[in-house]
Amino acid sequence: MNSKNGKFSTFQIAKACGTSRSSILRLEEEGFISPSFTEYSTGKRYYSFSDVARVIQVMTLRNFGLEKEIIHRFFDGHEDYQICLDVLQERLDNLTRIIRVVKSWQNANEDFRTSRKKIGAVRCYCKKRENNEPLFDFLAGTFTDAISQGLEINITKTPFLQIFPRPGTGTYEIYACIPVLDELRNGIIQIPSCRALAIQWRGSIKNQPDILKQIEHEAEASGFSGLKEFRVLAAYDEFTAKNVDNDIKGLQFLIPEE
Image (cartoon, rainbow, N blue to C red; front, side, top):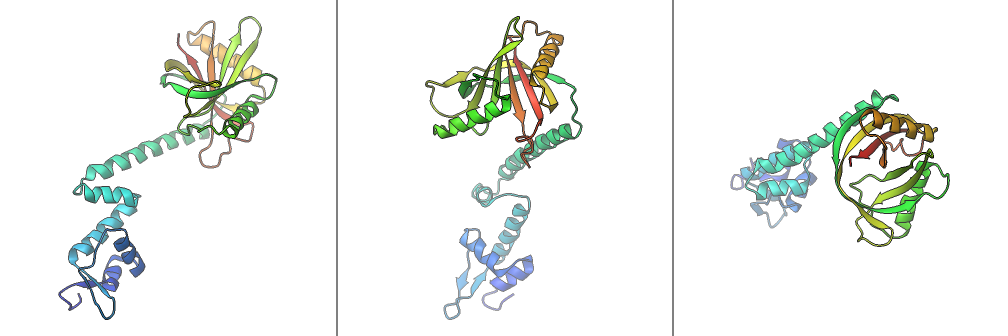
């Protein structure tokens, strides 16, 4: 402890906390600590014991992965740990979801897995497929069109294909749907919420017509006869984007209940 009024120097705090002087000064710049006094002749700063405790708290919270803004909210909220818990719980939920997805890729095969789920309403820029362009090239091209038109993409939603079987023909009417935040207008529609049968699948998409027929068969086996509509979402690898540019894709087929 420094003899000057029982305060600690920047060097002493840095050494005690296992960090650098510049890190201590940065914490001061960020408003976490404040020197009790500054020596006029040398510019040296001296801090109280409560500042040492605050440095340790901030470093601990940062080791938890919390950012400056969250830590400030924690202290501004009279050290309400619920603020930290809410953020950490959200990250845990997200990490759990990512682990579940990666495990599904690890164990992936061409079997179908079905479940029921609720789909929220979504506003989309939609474009009809007019030729035999490969489905995911068409989806990527429509995404490019949306950007070129200056639309604001809703990055919290996944682009998808909306497919309407033409009864008795073995053909389909297909639209690419890009979620956007823009107002409704020509080319931008609101697709309502619904409950749906969700079919998970992963494999090669080279034989796309055969995949669609398999989906229709799987839907019929789950009690959906006379299929009128389904949607196809491509779940890409969030870390390497490897599922964007090759023929192996993890797909989710959503079949709205009537």
